[in-house]
Image (cartoon, rainbow, N blue to C red; front, side, top):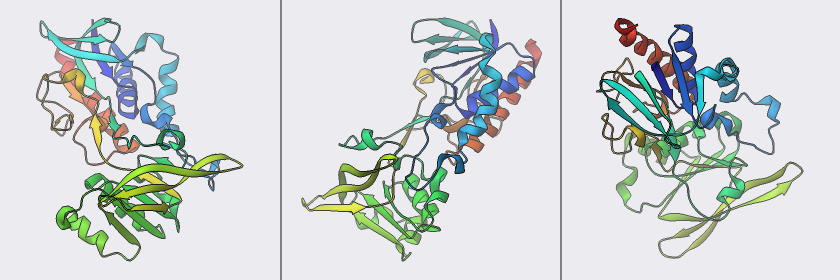
Length: 308
């Protein structure tokens, strides 16, 4: 029986586990890996790796504390969380079962892919899924954003402040599909071009001394028009889906599977906490997830105090 089980090994989960260890809780981190999405780094032909500060460098400080603590981690995906006699049973993919007095869900999100030729080939090689993380690298560059929702518009707005040109590719055709305050702001900017009614059919690129990098998109309009769009970088910002299936029906969540939490990282079910991108947070950033992981661990500690 554990005091606390933390599910997820990304920034929020790692931070929560380290804070729980420092509180001398009997804690176990259960995850398929350590680092989460920070294990993926965007490579660009004009940026040398040592010049870039990655979120992984921050996360590494917490990961290093756990790598030598075998008793505090179990490397396996979680399939479901259920209540058993007032406690919480965590069941993994191989049907390993662990009991805890409280759990923290920190499983992050997964992005919507294009599923077109070239996407996998150039993934993290000039093409990625987090414009907010890499926007500072595109000063005076040309960038393409694929998507039309709030996530895409926020990304385009961030890039428009520093990039020479920002292309927004969206499938919607209706004049009002960008009829928001942010959408109107983007439409008014001279360095922003919106291509409505276009679908991405291919990602293409070039090769230099450092390897292959994405350099553009093949587009097709609803009328069958084909268009080649070149860019220094491409960001797919269609949607994010929370990795919360293991607690579906156990806690309240929105239509995208993001878990509702209060200001103390508590869900509607006492003893279940959530942190990071899996919640209905405002932005998907490493530093935000780190802070929420710490907060969730401290909140869980307060919950567990009467049982310790």
